[in-house]
Image 1: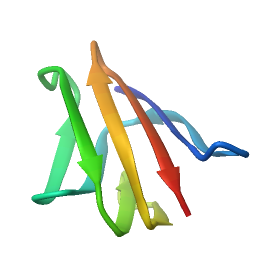
Image 2: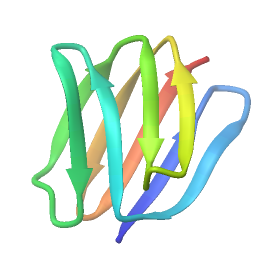
Image 3: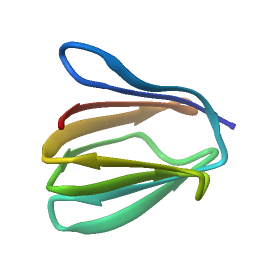
Image 4: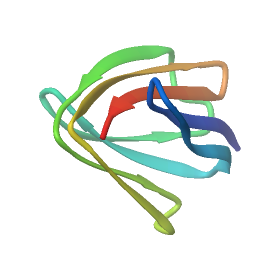
Length: 76
């Protein structure tokens, strides 16, 4: 499971465990699963989809994944 945090500078949008996170990367959508290699990526306008249950619309942001921890700092 991924320890997943999605936040803006003002508030927390999601915090919890996830099996799958889809992200709108600057060069295309991608999915993060457990045991993913470390990555830092810019995010473009789109939706962060967590476990096919939560859909978080964003304008832009950045995501960092390391050791089964995903942190996305976004603009709504």
